Image: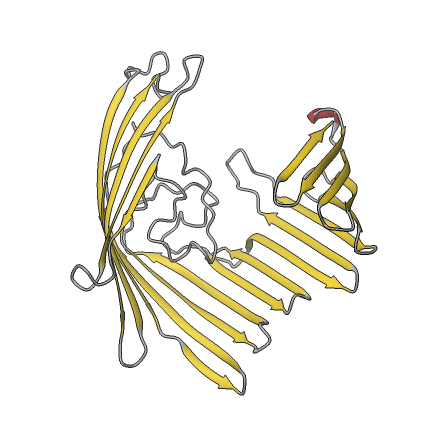
Length: 357
């Protein structure tokens, strides 16, 4: 349950007030850990554009959390900890981001170079061992999250300590709607204390890993989005993610590639690498065929699944029938291979029905 309230722009000291409140109740069976959480965040947001074109946004917030935890995982036999606990936490920070977009017009097209810098001022708060981590375990550092004031994905963990974040965005934008964009950036903690970020997040050291992104979109013909994470010490690759789509004549092609380096000393100490590719062919206005596969290149390489399917749309576009046959291939140690048959019927303006076997 969540409630968000946003005030009028420039209504309070040249900015606006926001209030975000959420409540969560996690109830598990079998005596496992139950959690109730109430969280409220009161913030103030303002944006200032200087006469020379410098765009600065200021965000300040004060947040309070209340946790009621029952049947705690930490209260195992012999630990001396109680089964139930009530924990409160308060936090305040200020986040200032400045961008200086430099635009060059080239007839109907234009280029952009945009340096960016952010200062996040936050206290070094005490550890709260009695607050469980239910929603902030999977930290994904990339170009979209680097400049966030809190890089944890949920509310159970808060990114404390002051830091500076910097980067540059470069783009070329065409009158046809096509564009190319590139970004590189990093953050640096001003405090020397350790953080709560897990190994492999790219944020455990004072200098974060280098974040890079490349995007190219060409007028519904081809699109490519590539994200990379490089170690701040030796520039070794930590993560690659590639998503590419192309349309040539009647063919649609999609490929997704993922690589993540293994984390020594953790449960995921082997590198993971996988490619997923799909190909579609538009036979005519009614029939569309598609096939695809997923291949693993990690510790146990091999084909993981393959599929073939079709879509049929009737002449008046009133309904569409879709069917897919999918074969999942597994190792002997991980279970039996399976075959799935999926079918659905979509009715225009009414929704769809489907079955799986």
